[in-house]
Length: 179
Figure 1 (cartoon, rainbow, N blue to C red):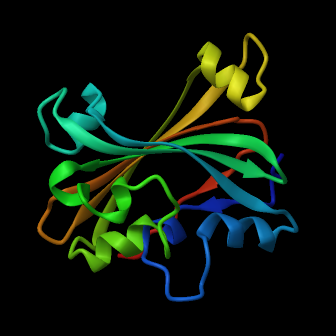
Figure 2: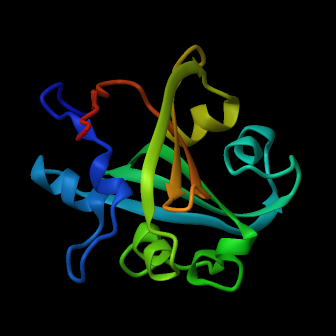
């Protein structure tokens, strides 16, 4: 998995990428001699789970657009990442289409007039569910590291909630803040 010297920083994942810059995960993995890719899963509208609805300032069960991905390191699953968007922001855009978003979701949000200006993250651990154990190759008693990131636009509107469930082995997270 990740060496301790590989400290993952959230900032590149919260800013729009410039043309030709590439995917933040692919770039981060390459800096450490690895290959980082994503496998896109389900994309579509679904009722907002309670914790997502609260973060997006929606009513629980209100429809949201969800994009589910499996994050791979050297071809091995290391993370399950689900990103949720208010339908008012994402419906009828590339975020609602079952294909990769050119330049990434944050860049598309910026083009749509919702450039993220604030990120809030919560990190915790919990026992892995059976589905998570199978997808991430974890053992029966393994836990997952969960990171929930909420991105908010200039006007204070939450525009994306990402729920990332990671294999905690070798994870090292660093938080940098510019004040």
